[in-house]
Image 1 (tube, helix red, strand yellow):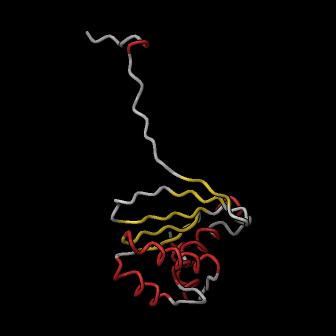
Image 2 (cartoon, one colour; image 1 turned 60 degrees about the vertical axis):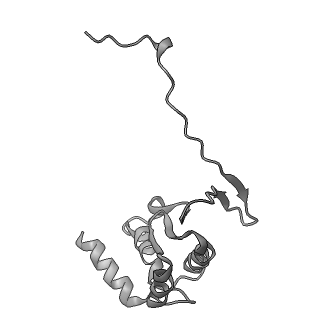
Image 3 (tube, rainbow, N blue to C red; image 1 turned 30 degrees about the horizontal axis):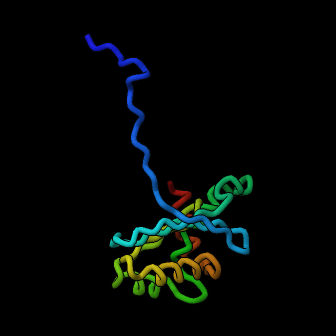
Length: 140
């Protein structure tokens, strides 16, 4: 018969400690950076406050639609140019209601951040892409 161990003899689970630095930019954005110099890939996640909680009544899914269209083009690059820029560096970018995320070969992180900044600051929402994505969402 296995009896539970008394609480005082149980070991605490190991704690995962992730080194990071926290900075607050002039615009109020909080930046968390966890450097891993030996990692072969750089991963970036940008979370946008609000998301689906701020969708207007009757227009649920608006935040998801806007996020999922971020990689469809910006004022700086169209969808094909974004793909052509990411492919040689093994990169990918995607968006959803919560924000945008991407990965790329470690040494190309500045390239990834530049594309992500363009997507967030200068997005384009081509009518044909919006209509296609909107219909896909409604079909779900």
